[in-house]
Amino acid sequence: MPDILVQYEAEIWASIGKTFVMVGVSILAAILLGLPVGTLLFLCRKGQKLENRIVFSILNLLVNIIRSFPFLLLVVFLIPFTRLIIGTAIGTAAATVPLSIIAIAHYSRLVEQSLLDVPKGVMEAAISMGASVKEIIFKFLYVEARSGLVLGLTTSIISFISYSTIMGVVGGGGIGDFAIRYGYQQFKTELMIYMIIIMVILVQLIQFTGTTVSRMIDKR
Image 1 (cartoon, one colour):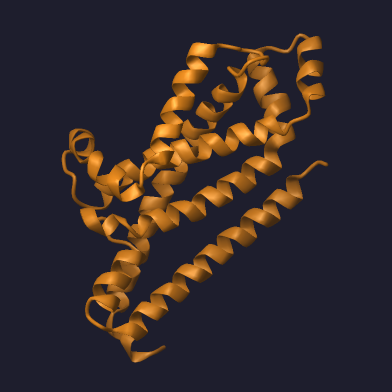
Image 2: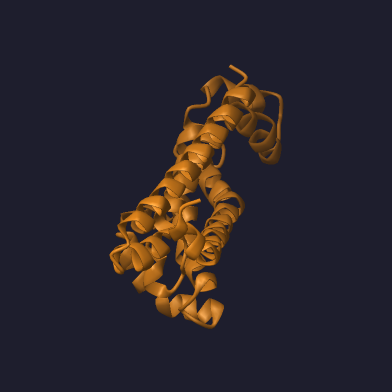
């Protein structure tokens, strides 16, 4: 192991841990809230089972607004809300708030797109069999779209990692923040390169895992 990595080993592991915390909370938010929001967007569209123009328009507008914000500005804009929820706007825990909000908006849109790719015949068959809304969602839509949902989540996780590198502005820490503070600002280019390599490896592992799982569960 290079001497510079040995010198900063404790800090590196701490930054990796903070990245995992921020990204982990974002993933939970995406699954627990982004998935239902995306599903509701799909079901409330014109011609779908729960067609509701008002609900669709409100959700669609909110998702579009959040996704259109430059992420750094979103972080700053949400500081009062973060302080209200967490009690502070500084630190790793505080950084999870804007990350979770962008995660919900980001993944909900990918969920909606995945469900739109489900053949219309699947919905028609489910309705003709008298399936309830819950059954349509879990026994038909999610089953048919599961490969796309996994790929969408994989893409989202990689985006969350990218977003997490910005969280140094609110003291969130993480690999990206470590690379900037210890590598770039202290002119330790070698250390910054090692951090970039760690990020690249992490992203490649996530992409490989997501693609493999998606391929395994693809029923087509």
